[in-house]
Image 1: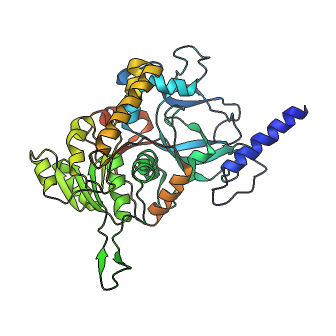
Image 2: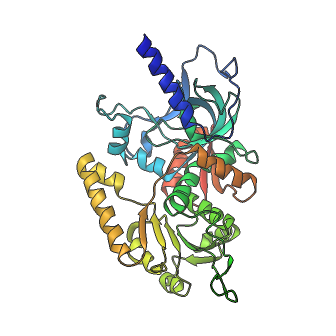
Image 3: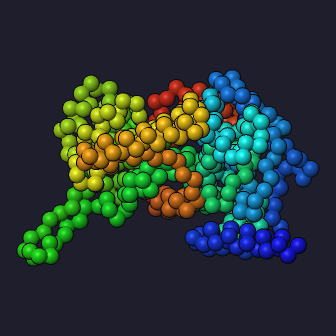
Length: 414
């Protein structure tokens, strides 16, 4: 019994320590639930898949089990709005299943296929319904937003359970529909630009600097020169706005019919990738300090040539072979192949005077706090291409699958 009590104390202390960075704790209410359905109800409506495949595997059910809190740092959110991202379409088809199932079941206790029925959807904007015992920074009734990691059950359902450190208070200036368009793409771009690329509001702005040893001379640090490939999608439209909020000079590559959109978001130069002379147009511009690649494929064979050599310039791609390698080769060989690929490309480009990096989505309530501040300051606005009702989720998947996005596809759950 003494050992059990010590274990409980240690677990609670550890969870509390993790949350020190939140702005303030909230008083724990005596009543923890806000009930919108019958107290006897244990099921909810949701869109699920029972196997991987094409769009017909999507199935609507009224009998998905309502999620429950398993850990003291979790919260249950009533979903008001969600969205569909390309990752959802890829996961529907089985992309990343090997790695994601390893994350879900690291000890391989479960049998193959036990991830089903699987709910897709990564973005959520909604209302907190219940909090775990160690959650100190949210309370039932709070309006919140979050991006759910892909190994967890998704948000195309009435309720979703998430870790408290993945959640943030929703920007006050946005509706739930607007808020649901941002978390996943915003955190993906934030990971690439800020976490991996090292850019922030302090190192993107040009400043006039006096040279200490020659007091009569000075020079101007130029604005960060940024190139965004695939600028009209969800990640690209967010990246343009955050880079302009940090006063960088942004060149956006997209198709001609998206040029007006990206210019409205703040892009300084816009290049049509279908023009036939895209590389010639890029050569006419100054070399770039940072390139964000949302396209992949053959892009990296030429894009790095436009970086400013031997100046710390960085190329970051969001299109990596990590999950595909594990699907194709298995966990061990896939990780080995990924390491070899990443290492060889990093070294190759390092000797050519530029940095080559991969970036991935990172779930983080702390980063969403920073993003919410930018939204409420008017520096970031949601870009929504189309909104679907909850009954039309399959149509939303088909729209995203066709590509050529001009912003996000949002699902109104309520």
